[in-house]
Length: 153
Image (cartoon, rainbow, N blue to C red; front, top):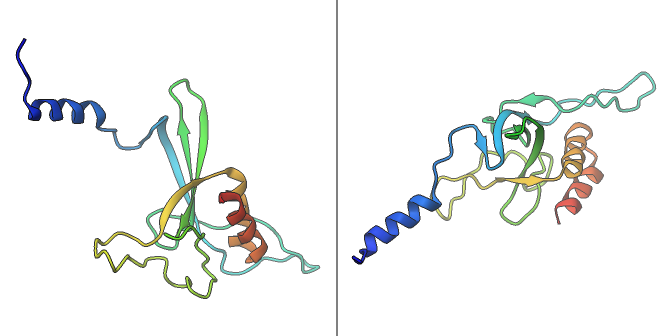
C-alpha cells in the first residue's frame, strides 16, 4: 500500500468538505425570491387618527436602506418555507433607523479592519421577531423594537 502525501490528503479533505453551492440555493433548498423592506416615510392614519397598518414598503435587497428581508425557499419535496433576516450590529443590537447612534449609518463599513466589509450583518431570526421589527419600521413605536430585540436574545 502506497503512502499518500500531505498535499493529497489536504486536497481530498477540502474537496469533500467544500462542495460548491450553485447560485440561488440555500442549505435546504432553492431560493425562489427575496423581498427587502425599508422604513415608511410617513405614518398613515384613518379619519379618527389611528394608525392604518399597511406594511412597510418593499425595496431592493442591494439597497443600503434595506433593513429586513424575507426569502422564500423551496424544498426538494416541493414544499415552501420562509426565512427571515434583520440587519444587526457587531454588538448584537438591531439596526434602528431612528436611533441616536445609528441614524444614517446603514452603509457604513468597518474601519478598523479596513477590509471593506459592512459594519452591519444579516442575522436569521424567527417570524415573530421579524413581525415586531416590521411593525417598528412602519409605526416608529420603540416598543416593537424592544420586543424584537428580546426575541433574539
